Length: 118
Image 1 (tube, rainbow, N blue to C red):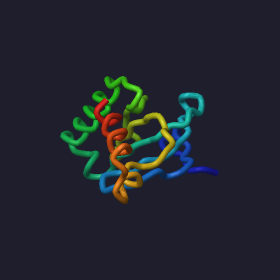
Image 2: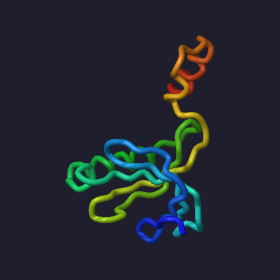
Image 3: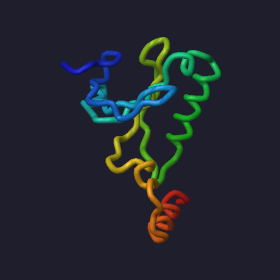
């Protein structure tokens, strides 16, 4: 049986891990088994009032953004006393670090820059 987080999120896979938390691909059982990316902030990064406020502000800023080149954000909350989360749409594709390995042709650089600036 797949791991469940907070009796709500069924973990399908881990998408990435960093110094502050982890991002998982999960099924959100409260939203009809919608597949989402679950970003967690854990430990010292999540328990201080300043950190909680900063994470909530990140969520609110992301919710206000509406553009074809940005992801949609769905929810924000606490998994437990030491772990905050936000959920967002899952986007398939290459990671930016994979695209910027060897030098890119100038037309590819322009294309990426235009998308980033939009």
